[in-house]
Length: 141
Image (cartoon, rainbow, N blue to C red; front, side, top):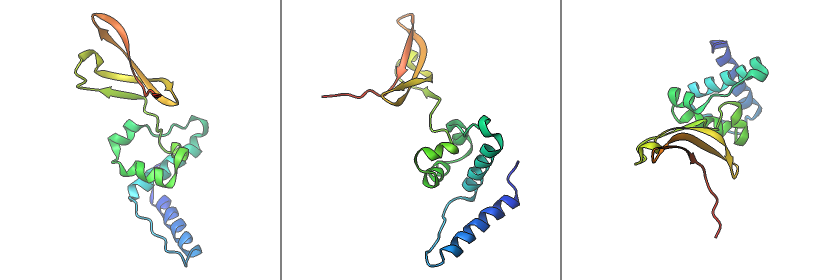
């Protein structure tokens, strides 16, 4: 269901109720209305679609919103809870201007190394097909 005036009225009422319940505490919410609308829409989609729900991906967010959306989500949904709204795992990385043509291109998520996402791409090196990888490596002294 699309965002409508009724949904915004629910948010405004919730804020007013919060202010009333905490009348001796100053309540100030300083975030973009658009960000809140998108957060509520995502939560609504999660409830309606149950197991078929997919959080927003990073490319969707970059295409549509500025960085304030991710900051707002992280503020109100700290840590892993932000995954209810947007998927923090990047599924692909576009490498450009690496200096070696074979290294440039799209790397896709291939798993994790030391608990952090790792990416791979098949490319050509010295006239042979090879696998290029991007991952974080923990070094010890």
